[in-house]
Picture: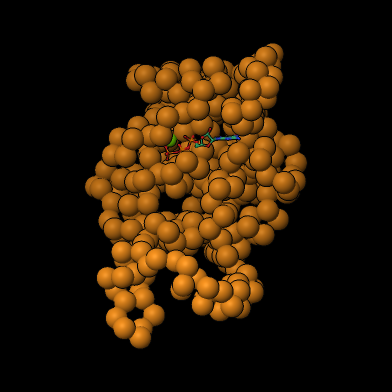
Length: 303
Ligand SMILES: Nc1nc2c(ncn2[C@@H]2O[C@H](COP(=O)(O)OP(=O)(O)OP(=O)(O)O)[C@@H](O)[C@H]2O)c(=O)[nH]1
Ligand SMILES: [Mg+2]
């Protein structure tokens, strides 16, 4: 370990956004010289968790859902082969449910509070599945007349749900109870970043790597345009706060493809080197390295 204090980076993302898969691929590729110039300088004392993740990743198995409340404190010591600089990194892996809990409960555990206040950078994960819950005002306006037209039909055909029955009084529209977890993911992601730059952490400046994971399923060649089109509120928040959130975007395929596609999975497992399974591009769509999101947080990439 180096004499300078370890630097803490957070990995933030809702459930199933690719956090553990990215960590598994990153850890597995840090010994490869063609990964963009970051190599392991000293092995962590506790490698069991990283070892498990890497084993699954190398054998083409999905990472299991990270259990809620389990705090995987990942720490390693890295060397930048371009400058020879050394750095100790703390990169905890947590379940997406933990972040949903922060959003819903407006509360986090003391352990996480310490990490959040110490953090000098954040990897923010979004998955194409998160886009299904994004609606813009034009969609809503278009949808409204369809709803109006079909209301009579729906009233006759649909039995009211227990929630609706409970809350409806005669002659009134039934009330649907608010469910935090059904809110649009882009609203949740904005809020999670606001916890860091506003109450309670008040970070003046944070490096941010926004990772669009499962990039192999995205039909777009430019992560910046892709985020703008699919999570416009979140994208606008990043742009508007770019003095405090010094962000870079990446499209990352840490798994290389869908494992349910047997032919694809076999072709990935037949690659000469594991690192060839991953594809990473920067915000403008240029090919880059799996380590680039981490290098950006470490200040090793030019602004
Ligand atoms: N096609 C494709 N799927 C991916 C990729 N990376 C992750 N996935 C899939 O996305 C899902 C979630 O991945 P995880 O890495 O477990 O996500 P997570 O954020 O750690 O999830 P939690 O631990 O539940 O918070 C899994 O089904 C993965 O197989 C990728 O590069 N391509
Ligand atoms: Mg996980």
